[in-house]
Length: 162
Image (tube, rainbow, N blue to C red; front, side, top):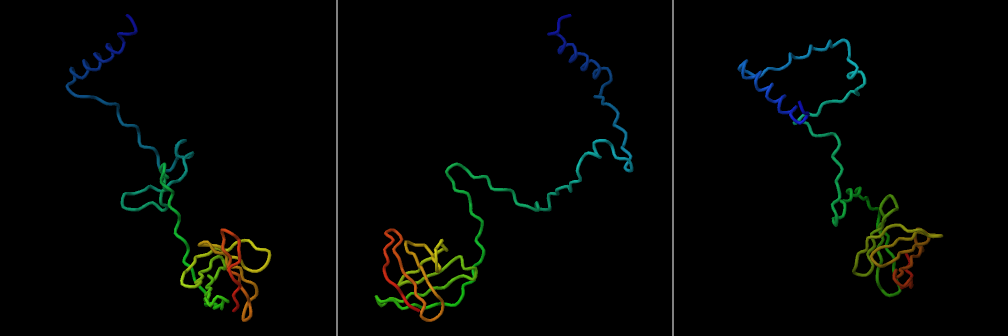
């Protein structure tokens, strides 16, 4: 007998057995494992809680970025703004600085515009950048100063006093 006829022979034997008995047969079910004695696979498997359809997963699945679509940013922590600090500038404009409690961000109203700024490295004082401007303050309390700088040219527009 050739090997190429083996699948055909196996199939005909199975069909013949079913036809003589009239029903499909199956192997007897395996014996129930003893709950007190773990099997080798149960002992090696870590304990994992089952996931049910009614309970959502404890951790949301990570978003998979698609090509050309920027990944979503996590929501920012709520900001708590401190007291407003008012500065008078030689041009007649008022500058109102409001720092968040962490000191990482600043909301600046300069003239009629608002700027959202973030802290930047500086050798002295507090330097914030954002919206095309740099706010560089030195000192605290009455008499402290702050320079308003155009970020693109690094040119000081004016120095304002508190």
